[in-house]
Length: 90
Image (cartoon, rainbow, N blue to C red; front, side, top):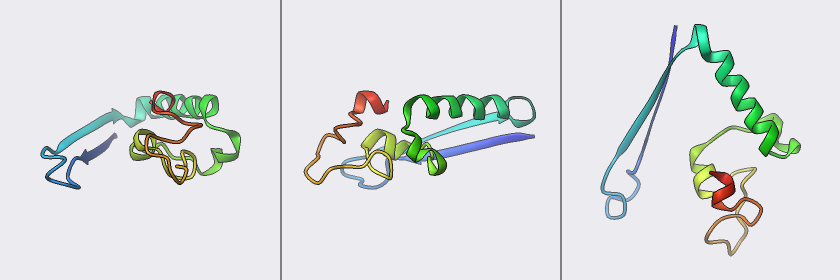
């Protein structure tokens, strides 16, 4: 069985994002899915505070821009959350 994940970005504002980028990943779920899930679990355990583990989801928008339950933005924060600057999120 193959597992396919495809996502796009760059269509929210044509004047600022004139190009659409589409990327995808295809894995042999019967052979490597457990390894992928285990590696993502290790990354979460190592980097995300335990209080967020139960509902944590890797979401590119939150990781890149800040925001969501874990990478919360402060009211006047333009660059990104203080606890989670861009270099740490990446």
